[in-house]
Length: 375
Ligand code: GMT
Image 1 (tube, protein in one colour):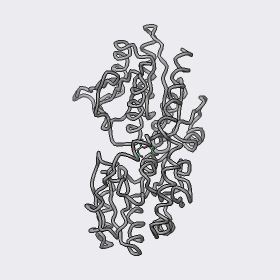
Image 2 (cartoon, helix red, strand yellow):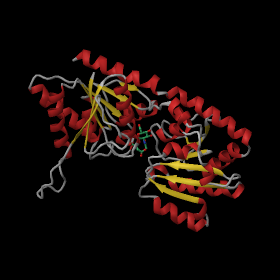
Image 3 (cartoon, protein in one colour):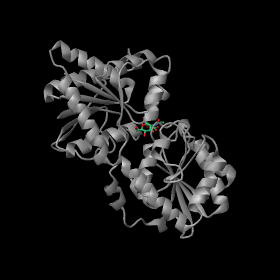
Image 4 (cartoon, helix red, strand yellow):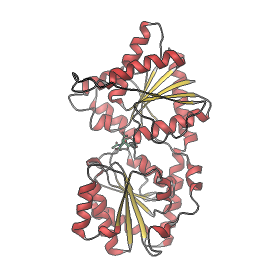
């Protein structure tokens, strides 16, 4: 199939899932066209099956806001015609589903009928999309997609609760290539990060409020009071300063390393003993799955789709949002002995297997085939 993928090209989970999906589909022999404003971060390799088309928005002083949706829908029309694209897969409802719908309508004028698959990722529904300023447009674009998917059962339920949806929503979870993860780093160079007796804890996100990153510091502070440990904070975002300030107030700044955005997530996870994800909202929790696939147990909140990924007492533990004391206790349970830690590490990988690329990508392929047949 010839498939266009529209996504955010940044470090966010929706862009990562879209990019990994495109790469996996290309490996299955499909022709993939990424259409976005910048080459996606995880898309290092363009090849016979992988193409990237940049959407440029010319600056014009009259516009207070440059019309990205307009430029995107025009680019979609041009690329669909030029490359004979058969299916459009848009990731993140805002504004991609809206732009995709406009492209479909323009193409229909020329008797070209292309189905659109819309994948809902989380904040496009739970945070931004349900805002009254966007809600009518988001409802409209979901109802006018040919196929709608959500990344967890919990997000499906949230969508049905928050919007007036007439379409069936298919749950297609985030995925990960397990064998690659397990074998990717044999020499972790753990000694560069911590002393042999120290445990290494990590957190990866865009350090936004929704991730409750100051809770990460609170949990770590309680852990390091009991056992020697280090915390690695990966990612950039508006809450970084508050976290750094909190570390200083607690006098733990030397034990916490802020490394910014990283392309070496696998390497960091390789020497990590425990992953913390105390989010306020999390439709799936790709970061937790990435950790589990690398054999890292997860202590997380029980919000959104996290209980579908992190299995309580198996791959880690879950607690109510904000219950940092319980999260710290759970972390200590896992880290208390090598025997316990190794048991949880093994169980984390096993729980991640459910989301192996080979199991999930065919679900998307089947939805594309059905959508094309129905056109
Ligand atoms: O979590 C983020 O801040 C990034 C965000 C995004 O939209 O890129 O991630 C969302 O989509 C991911 C991929 O489907 C999910 O794994 C994340 O749980 C989800 N984030 C939230 O719901 C907060």
